[in-house]
Image 1 (cartoon, rainbow over the protein chains, first blue to last red):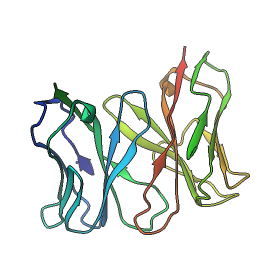
Image 2 (image 1 turned 90 degrees about the vertical axis):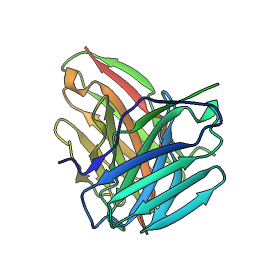
Image 3 (image 1 turned 120 degrees about the vertical axis):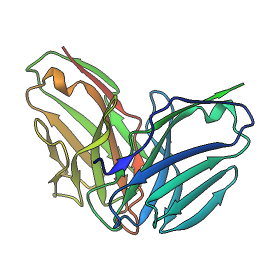
Length: 112
Length: 113
């Protein structure tokens, strides 16, 4: 069983739609959860950062963590063609030196 | 506003050749990382460093060496390149505190023929 599971897609939706991206994980000790956005031929950039369970909102983006279900989500409202990218979930135990555990990424396409 | 800078951006190597990828960060971060990203495999940690003069192995360290002689630089070396090392390499850095949010460079595309 992989530590972090993420559907690779592609996920194609029309402009203006609400997008839901998800990851499941197996290690209940994970405490910090992040979403990265990666455009083609670019490095991942941090989009959202959440500690423990709950919701966090930033503009059109909402990150949700449900630790009891080991499930995290990223919602994008009023999706734009510029949101087309690969979205990577990531998580770690907190304070660890050995980096993050990543999902493999979901390729999102917003159709104009 | 440089952040994490990687050089070179593209390189083609012949099997058996050696090379070094250079990473520089200007955020005074303690922790630095080298990842590789392959289709269907996601991002995998090669080596990391928690401070100047320290290095440690990640998930896929074989065939690579690293050095952190200065806090702002983290070098990734391939002593004898193999086709299996064809990949995109990302350097990253972080403060190492509270959740350890990591910031990535733009990537180095390496092809071994």
